[in-house]
Length: 199
Image 1 (cartoon, rainbow, N blue to C red):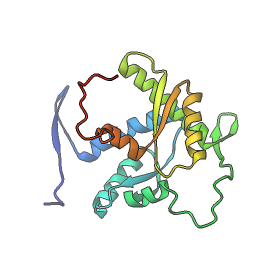
Image 2 (tube, rainbow, N blue to C red):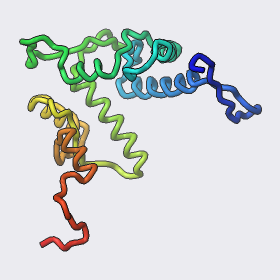
Image 3 (spheres, rainbow, N blue to C red):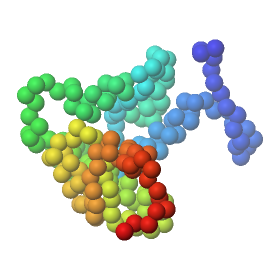
Image 4 (cartoon, helix red, strand yellow):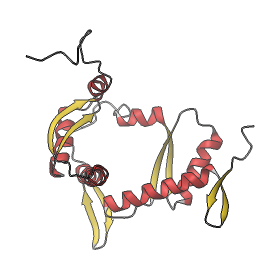
């Protein structure tokens, strides 16, 4: 029964607590928002949500309600194919000027702060590095970056500069298909012998 409510009984200090998938999702979203707020340096109040294309209306509505319960205004709920089209610039009309600088005006304690996508990316990378350092138990100093295959040279260079500004030495910038091939050992020729001596 798709419409039947789903509940879980989980251990709690005072016995057993009954929670729903929405309750679990709310805690996840709260953690994501808190992490984003710390990384960005200001509080987020709006969100665009990406959901699987096969989500039903009920699932889309439940997902939106979770973000709203977390205190965010949901501007749009997008299906993953549409979000992918946006990510790869397939939604832009012919003649779109890629070289035009992009800036955002965001609230700050002393008024309004102007930031660029690179500024936003830098804060994200700093948070990722800090989290990785804590998880690994040592500091990272080098990185191999994976970018979309359709990234322009300017986008690749901007991405590399963000990682370098975060204090990392960039060993290589790889396209996603190439990175996937390496991850699955598809870059090795047939009969490749891992134990064979290299001369």
